[in-house]
Image 1 (spheres, one colour):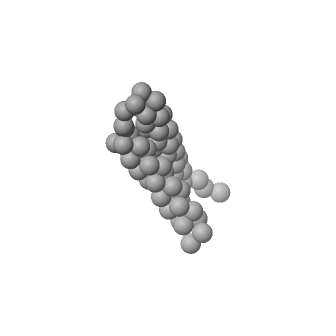
Image 2 (spheres, helix red, strand yellow; image 1 turned 45 degrees about the vertical axis):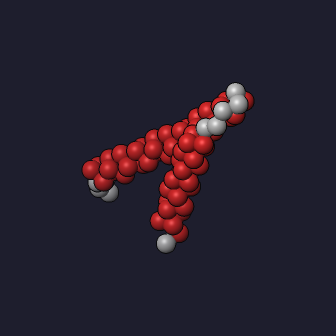
Image 3 (cartoon, one colour; image 1 turned 90 degrees about the horizontal axis):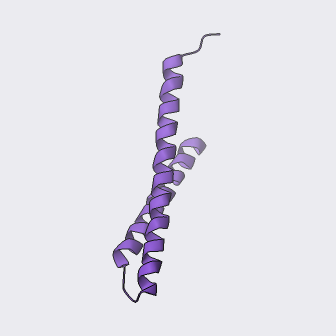
Amino acid sequence: MDIDWAALGSVFGVSLSATVLLVTLFTLGIVGLSKHEAATERGGSATLARTGAYASFALCAAAVAYGIYLIVS
């Protein structure tokens, strides 16, 4: 049996990068929603924070859907 270490390292690197990206997007979404909530409690409006949060969640969902598409097809 022969292991292709370069391919294994490549898969590991892509997996690690994708995981960090998804966690970062989800974290940005949570931070955006908390900033929007804090602004509305003070009587202000933070529509940019809410829009950014929804965009982050949408990108996160799109990445997960693409991953599922790659697995199923």
